[in-house]
Image 1 (cartoon, rainbow, N blue to C red):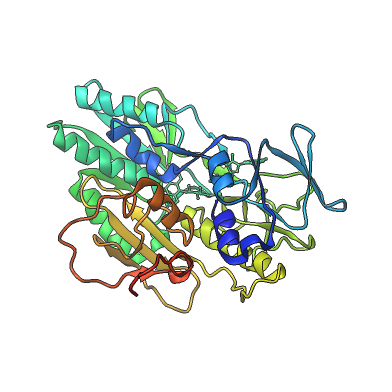
Image 2: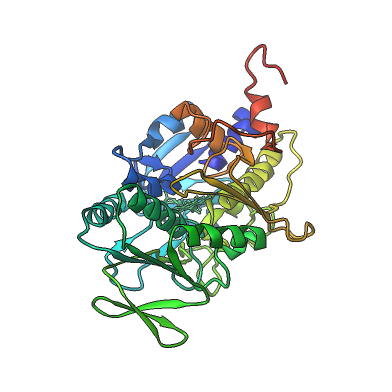
Length: 389
Ligand SMILES: Cc1cc2nc3c(=O)[nH]c(=O)nc-3n(C[C@H](O)[C@H](O)[C@H](O)COP(=O)(O)OP(=O)(O)OC[C@H]3O[C@@H](n4cnc5c(N)ncnc54)[C@H](O)[C@@H]3O)c2cc1C
């Protein structure tokens, strides 16, 4: 989606775009963690409508293999899609390590809603949120644990035992020290027991063992995330974890005209905001090659995340590109605009326009003046008449 929107903004009608995707709708998966707490389901956007709005062709199907010599993408249905440039944004492959009762992968709002209902009714009281080893999405288990703790308080459920088990040395370590310290306090205040540098293993029904060491706790439910591995697309080289290697502009080495962005790539942090930054870098190269006046910039990873807490959301930011030292930031006020859970130059304003809200997350009304990042690329392109800068 970000590549499509960026390409249209940067290259206008210099490029013909075809989208190949297996599902009929785009859903904003990060907001799925909010779904169990709300009566309404997360709405999706019909890809056919989005494609039409941006003058792209849309084909429902899966990519089976790439025949780069002939410059065709072959679908699972046997269709051949010719290309000059190919962008792989097929995501990571989720792997389920164990038979937990509840997963958090953006597709199980109903299972998590049931779990919440059982907690509210007092039918269960001990839930462990367990982060798997290896690549995984940083935020969702923290969102769910904090929101669940707040929900239990709101429903007068005393005696609930929530535990978060993570291999990270510090909570949300990838966001840096300031964020980790503040998140540790948030978990403490929510009464959530935290076990860092730990791996959770379900040894027998009703117990979670933690390694290293011989700790074990009683549990009624485990909520976990899938481990992420690379997608493997036939015809595309992949590294040892099956992720696709790219250069800083998203080019797949040795395959001229083939790009990859997002969770499918070897970049170690799997996060929608970073996926969008990679997509922008790719779109810039393609737009420039199509003759647009664009100076393609390499992917510079700035991690932006919104942590849902059940109270005011927290905006987290860290520059992963080096050179800025530990610039870890956390704030109850939005640090970028629009303040969406997926911070994306083109997709975030687009999603905001669809919902009519400033961002995904409710903003406090008493916001003090603070520094906010606004990416003007999209705003200037779509500037309405009479817009005052
Ligand atoms: C519950 C949850 C909460 C999250 N919270 C946040 C958050 O707060 N902020 C944030 O920035 N990120 C968050 N993330 C991570 C974010 O959703 C991902 O990093 C992001 O979606 C990655 O984008 P992507 O396009 O690389 O892959 P995906 O979003 O996984 O999209 C891949 C697409 O490719 C399609 N596809 C797969 N295989 C094929 C094939 N062979 N042919 C054609 N199409 C194919 C898939 O159907 C899918 O449409 C969260 C994730 C989850 C699950």
